[in-house]
Length: 468
Image (cartoon, rainbow, N blue to C red; front, side, top):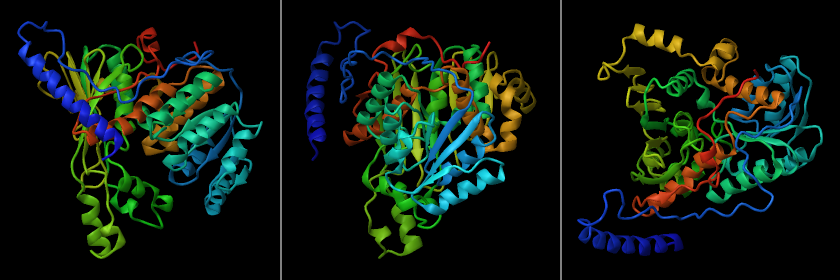
């Protein structure tokens, strides 16, 4: 048994004793007091002298954003293509340990009329790239384990950092990102593309304009059957890195696609914050069964141990009493879903499995298709109005990837706060380890660290900034 499990077992026994005493005394206890609190497995460290928060951080504007893209697999190739369509960008460097991936990216630049970039193929070349003095933004699309190390080094060398999801795998890595951003005053954004999908943007606009009343509950998910990719040694993930994560850890391994959009609708760390969570996982069935059927019962894949349970369910409670459900399942045959559900005192919206909205005074029925289409046009987010047409032409998950890149470059060029900040990256990614700890301890409540160290009270709402 691990040290953390022993510690939590002792705490659990203590909690039971305290609860028993509390039940005896409950007749005299005030109704607004709870019998126990969530376990603080990861205390919040003091902010170092000289550091201040970076909420709504502004950096010096730049006419041209000079970019290095590190990692040119599935996501990196798309980034090269999309960024080449955005004015005021220059792709200076390209890096991947697979030389053919660098060659493919260079080909894309040439086809789109862009200058050839400097190519790198060494495993440690990302350090050399971060040390260059002709780069403003390091755009990271590597496997998960390199996300935080590259972003931290890039910021230390004076660069802004944009990293694919998740931004961090542990609470320690999340604090590394936060502290480095606060120390260097550099932007650090996690590239959460799902925040920019068309329906999510419309419902954010609706929420901010009060259409749903007070949002009391939200749900998000990443339900995506990835079994064929996890086991495909040629077309799947480089060096089978994603399958290895399924082998070594349980919990919600990939929370941000579902959490990001609803977190912004709930103004997380801009007037509210995630307080604590509880998480449970089913046992693992899907990967073993798939491996037996595809490779045979005597294959190494079939005999391997996979710690990741098929279905992970995490419930988060916010300081203002809202709840969020986040689910993760990539190993069962299910239709794709991110759920994206907002439920408020005046209305309801959901994208999967059925896209629909219901509003007072007829809240128990979905709007008709015609009424829904009309409402979505009325509440189309201004950013979608501005760039949605071009986004659909360039593409990237229906256009949301392009909007994500467009907004990043726009804000850097104009010296504006980015739509998503380092605290978003830390909070949303922290669910990985927090959920794992809760799962290991039979769903015990675990506190979510306040990565803003109290500064969340200074803001009231999420803002996607525009020049006046």
